[in-house]
Image (cartoon, rainbow, N blue to C red; front, side, top):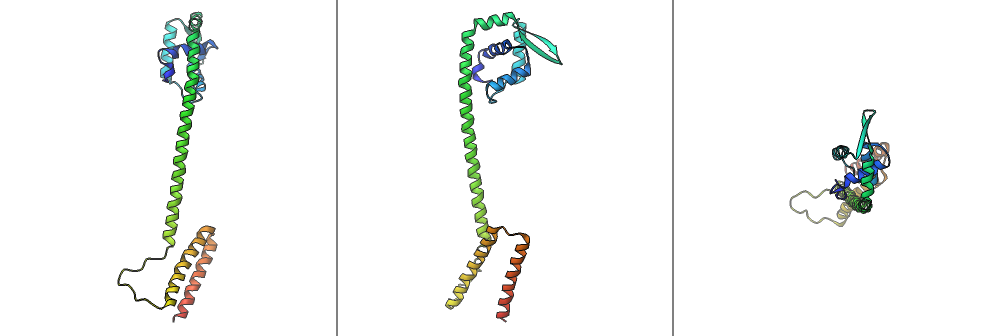
Amino acid sequence: MTAVFSHGRLRLYLLKLLDDGPKHGYELIRLLEDRFLGLYAPSAGTIYPRLQRLEVEGLVTHTAAGGRKVYEITEAGRAELRQRAGELAALESDITASVEDLSSLAGEIQNEVRGSVRDLKRELREAAQQTRRARWAPPAPAPGPAPEAGPAPLAEFDQRLAAFTVEVGALVRARRLSDSQLRTAIRLLDGALDGLRRLLR
């Protein structure tokens, strides 16, 4: 139960709500939830025992309607409201302040959650980019003794081959090719490989 309803103040507020007209327990719960902008709602286990005590004290009565108890304030209940009008005004002021505090806290939590979601999305994007880079990076040289430095054209060929692999991968990923376009790209690569094989026979 929210702190503004400590020391029997919920009992007073229930009388105030019933002064506006007869209501069943779940109506009172809904009205309290609306008053707190949906940020707080008392349970049935909080409301019904208090209504029963109010009835024992002669401040409310109930009638059965549609299988529910409908509670109505008595003249004794209205007299108590009049006697405690100052306390009720202070309670209304405290409720307003409590709603503002709860709204502010809810806003802070929402901002924190949004920030966490943004961070998570950024981390997922970075992980996906790293995976793509790793997938299209040229293979690492096989372990073993370092090869002798070859002629300049061979080094240039290796650079071109690595750059070709990276660029083709980037182009395909960036354009999100269809299955048929991907099959055409694969045939082009196969054709280039066949041409190199014929060249080297």
